[in-house]
Length: 303
Image (cartoon, rainbow, N blue to C red; front, side, top):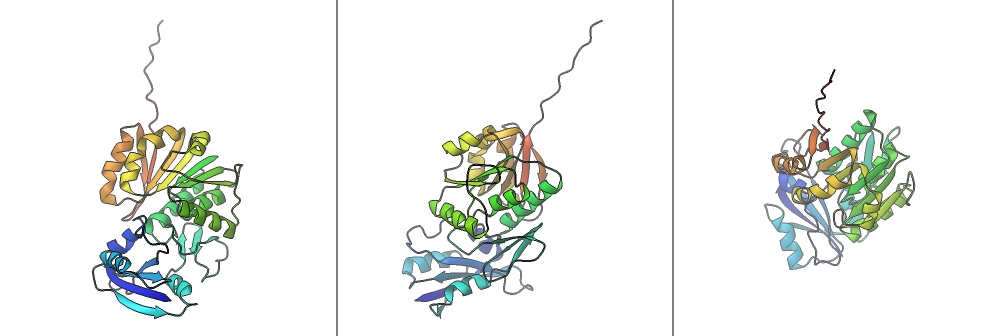
């Protein structure tokens, strides 16, 4: 049995779903969640759709209802229709040179295309934080930044790591996530998108890790670029580890935090010697941080 449940929500509630982690930890087969804006004239009135392959339990329905602000609407779907319908609302996302699309849509000519299926892992490109990170990577490469060693922390679907390797094909890249399911999803997506897995240049290494707590990350450090599209709390907690793992001329790109949360996050990194180099735009901006350059000491010439 396939069921779609739709719950009215605000824009903020819909966008928050993409960064809320595992919303159904006790469900052996959690639903696919899709949030959309059905009426452009009402930008704050969104809908949250949940696609179930089974009859939803009372607990699952209650959890879903709590994510929105109205009563749920139930629809029975055909057995072969639910996956297609769950992705029908996911329009291709264009960010910089990248286009991210589901299997429902074909790749676009003369762009860097990634096919990302709706899945248990976040990072399909639909959320502003993910598309903002894609734009940030695109700008870094256009500015002439050269990268040899990249880490994508909290990779989700693997999308940002894939994009980095497309822009810097000679670099090494490691992508990690605390969720083993996300790492397997990223592995599948790598195969779909022709991303080579391995330890060498131009290859992606995948690993399960809680933040920077991984021997693989320790062996790869220091990194030219660390990109983390997660939440404000973990970004603050990881500030010491990110700072230690960053090369002297490296860059940290932080995302997943609202503009209103930025002050506390940036302060945690500033206290450790990093400085804000640039900020993105919008409600969910990316933040670029780099090590503070050493202060030049004055010299005295004795004659």
